[in-house]
Image 1 (cartoon, rainbow, N blue to C red):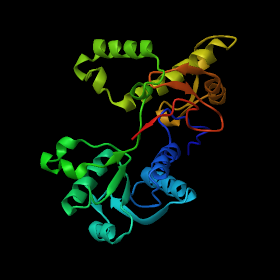
Image 2 (image 1 turned 90 degrees about the horizontal axis):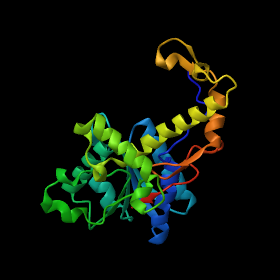
Image 3 (image 1 turned 135 degrees about the vertical axis):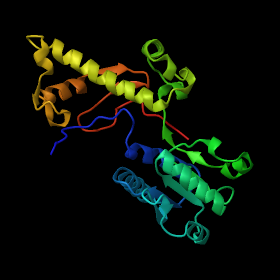
Image 4 (image 1 turned 180 degrees about the horizontal axis):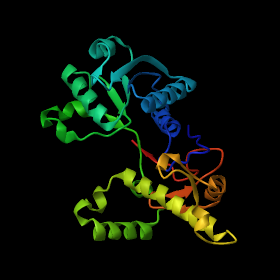
Length: 266
């Protein structure tokens, strides 16, 4: 069993997402909702965080509905549950693919707008729906993490442009254009860049700056290998800070989320 000493995130955790969602409830005086979530370990944990945060802030979850990822179906009668409830707010916490299936089902059952306001954790392509149904999608909200470039926050444009140039040079056929790059690609880049910056600082501080600073122990199989000086590397990561392509990057020992550069967009 591998014991994780610490986890750092450039994409914010569900705890921060829940706090962002609470702002909607407070602003519009919503006091209850129905929650739909898919039944895998990752999303179930996120749904619990959302549920606990809503409860602490005085909101009531009237019903919790499970979307089974094996059968690809809602467990229970979605239409009956929604129409018999007194709330008209539906929180959907699921992956992009599951979200599309659930919204398609809800569209067929006529339980989207204007009857209900849906709040989603994942965006989905509108192109998968007939344009005649677009009116039913009005009022649907998506709460998702975004990089600084989408909210006019500080970011390292020099590094961003350099990354794009390298991408276009080595894999031009996969480069979608700077305006169409998935936002999670920017978060992934900053995660990698944080590790590079930490290794560079850690190795430069060693008395004998050599390959020993990145020494591993264990078999050649990647999941059985361990970085020998992992604690020292993590301490180094706590000491660095830089302006990344998604915004400011800095970490703290006591939390998994980045300490700054947290942006959500509804």
